[in-house]
Length: 397
Ligand code: AMP
Image (cartoon, rainbow, N blue to C red; front, side, top):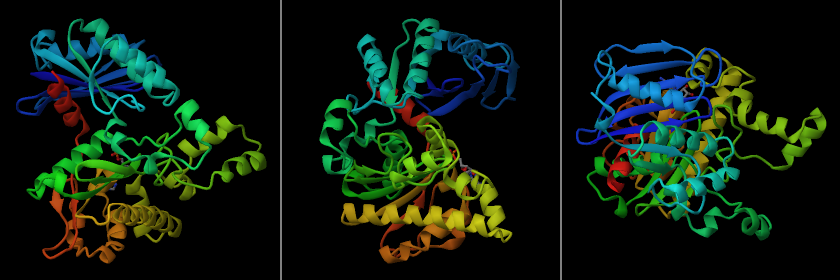
C-alpha cells in the first residue's frame, strides 16, 4: 500500500509518498508560501528530475490538490490515480495527555486536536488545516494522526511535573510533554536493532540535535524523560530557541528593554539559542564550526556552551536510568556535525565510552563510533520521521 505522509505548517506542506511494502520513497516534495505571494510546489519523484511549479496557491486545499496532481501526472507522477493512495499519515504536534499513540482520524479526534490547540497554538491549527484539506480532496481515504508528544506519554509524574502551584496543572494541564517523539521512538528502536538486541532490555539516550533539539531517556522501551517541556522551548540551546534559563530573565529583559511579553516570546523562540549567543553569526552549525575552525572565539564559545549542555543532559539521564547502554546521535547536527559530536564525546569518557574520533567525521550514516570494549555504545542513527509515520499509519489499518 502507498501511504502519503503529510507534515503541514501554517504556510507550508511537506509530503512523501511511501510504498509501505518496500519502504521506498516514491516521491517527495514541499509546498511553500501557501496564501502568500510567491507560492510554489517543488516535487521530486524518485529517480527523476525535480519539478518546480510557481503559481498562486491560496490555501492548503489547493496545495493538496496540486500534490495529488503532481503525484498522478503522466510525466513526473509516480502513480496512475488517487486510488493508489491507501492512507494518509499526518504529523500532529500536540496530542496532550489524550493521545499516547497514533489514531485513525474521525470527528471526535478532530475535536480533540482542536481543543489541544491552546497548548500548541502555532502548530495544531496548521496540522488540522492539512487534515481538512486531505478530507476534502481525498474523500474516503483513511487518515491517521501521529503525534509528536505521544512517545513521551510514558514519562512518570516525577519527570513531567513542574515545581509550580498544582492548580495550574489541574486547570490548564501545564506539565512537560516533550516533542520529536516519533524520532526518539524510531531512533531508539533502530539503535537496539543495530546491536541485535531488544529495546526492552536496554537503557538508551537519544540526542535529536537538529534546528530544534531534544534529548530523551528511553528505558526498557519506554521514554522516562525528555528535555522539551510544555512547549519546544525548554531544554537544550537550539538554532534560535533559548532552551532552559532562569524564568526571572523574562521580566528583567522586558522591563529593561521595554518589551511586551509577546515580543520577549519572539526573542526566546527566534533570536536566541546559538544564533543569539554567537552574537547573530548564524543559527547554522556549518557556519559556526567553520568560524570556530578559523579562530572565531565567540563561535567556539557557542559550540562549547551548546555541547556542554548536551553533555549535562546525557549525564542526568544516565543517573535517571541508573546506567546507559547506548547514546545515539541523530538529526542534522547529530548526524553531520563533527564539531559538536567531538565536543560532546569529550565528556563521555566518564561513562566509560572509548570513542574513535575519526568515525565522528563520517556524515549522515548509521555507524557505531565507539571502539570494542567501550562500556557504552555511542552511535549515529539517521532519523526518518516520515517512514516512522508511514509505519504507524499502516499498523493502524
Ligand atoms: P534539521 O533540523 O534536523 O534539518 O537540522 C538542521 C541543522 O543541521 C542545521 O543547524 C545545520 O547546520 C545542521 N547541519 C546539516 N548538515 C550539516 C553538516 N554537514 N555539518 C554540520 N551541521 C549540519
